[in-house]
Image (tube, rainbow, N blue to C red):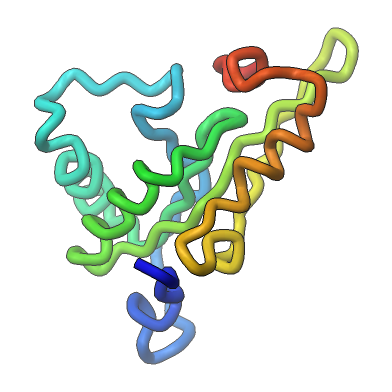
Length: 139
């Protein structure tokens, strides 16, 4: 797949419309997400749950982590049910004793030509730390 097709072109062919959305979705790539079903049916079970909830647009926002292969696979499954998924990250930032979580939504340009430009961003955002240090739940 040399270029990821724009979500808007396929999912919303008539342009703007009202849809139910969830901007804060986690997947099994996130340490806080639990899935106990058959691994062979993970994608379909995940997308079926979105469909059952009436979600037509979702953003995958795992804690300080983006799993490119998992995202591509979930997006392909979701498209079959006319559900759009966008790439994102729940960015955890420590501030002394407090911390904040910011949901970051990336455009498809971050994934152009089959390239993952989100993980290099995370490496820079958490400079001086290894992924095992910043991909922890709510770190």
